[in-house]
Length: 61
Image 1 (cartoon, rainbow, N blue to C red):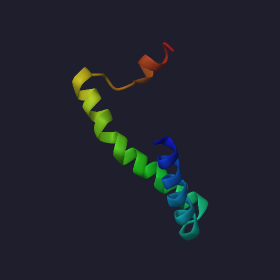
Image 2: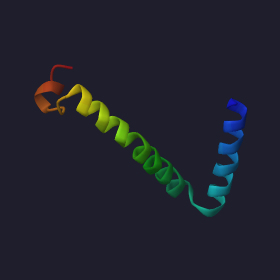
Image 3: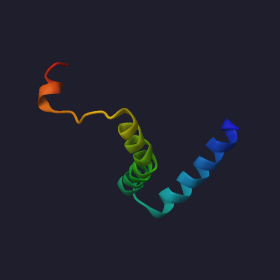
Image 4: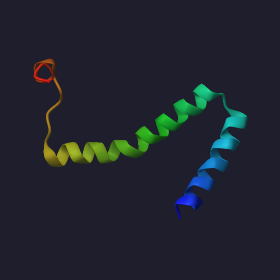
C-alpha cells in the first residue's frame, strides 16, 4: 500500500513539475496541506478550548 501511494505521488509530482516552477509547486503543496489540516486544527481548538499564544505565555518557554 505504501508503495502504491508513493508511486502515485511520484507521478503526480513529476507531472506538476513539468507545468510549474519549483517555488510555485512548493507553495501549492503547502497551500493544499493547510486547507486539508485547517478544519482539524479548528476542531481541536474548539474541543479543547485552547487559548491563543501571547507574548506573556511565550516568555515562559
